[in-house]
Amino acid sequence: MSHEPDEETPGEDAELPTLTIEGADELIEEAAAAQAARENAETGGELETRIAELEENLATTKDLLVRRQADFDNFRRRVLKERQENQNYGHENFVKELLPVVDNLERAVEHAKENEGTEILAGLLEGVELVSRELLGCLQKHGVTPIEAEGKLFDPTVHEAMGQAPDGSVPVNTVVQVFQKGYELRQHLLRPARVMVSMVPPEGSAEPTAEGGQEQQEDENSSS
Image 1 (tube, rainbow, N blue to C red):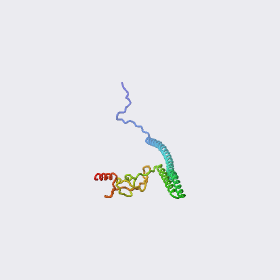
Image 2 (image 1 turned 60 degrees about the vertical axis):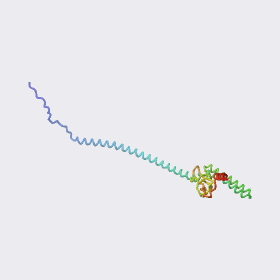
Image 3 (image 1 turned 180 degrees about the horizontal axis):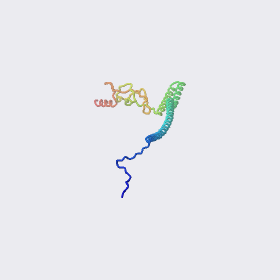
Image 4 (image 1 turned 135 degrees about the horizontal axis):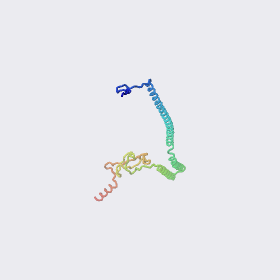
């Protein structure tokens, strides 16, 4: 029995047929270029959108800065005006309270001119004392108080020593005389008190103190 020979099958070493399309490389390159152009177009659109957003934010920021600058200029002008007014009229209430004191002083002077004799001197003295009390009361109302000095130990923070006087009746560095009163404004020094301060008397000229005089008297009594 004879068999017809089968169709020939290629061997392992046989070359496989290849499919070649004329112009395939050019088509691939054109497709890649089209894809890149499309991607660039999309990226360019996003970039333009981002630029538009930044320009809008910049315009808003500029407008805000302009408004803030205008507000600051107005604030600065208002502060300068208030400071100037405070310098010119900040003591207005204090001056108003001093005016009655001035009125009373003027009345006392006019009354002294209209009268003569010793009676007017007593009246003038009484009027001046009244004005002095009113003035001190007005100062104290505004926080101005006199500095205690006479009989106090010398304090360089509130006292200004004008000299020293030998005095054995008080401790050393005690204020024995006040030439000019000092004043404080709510514990802030306005003017120091000008004072005379005690010092140790020279030997042989010291006045005995009360305690020393008593001891000397006791010694004399015991010796007699």
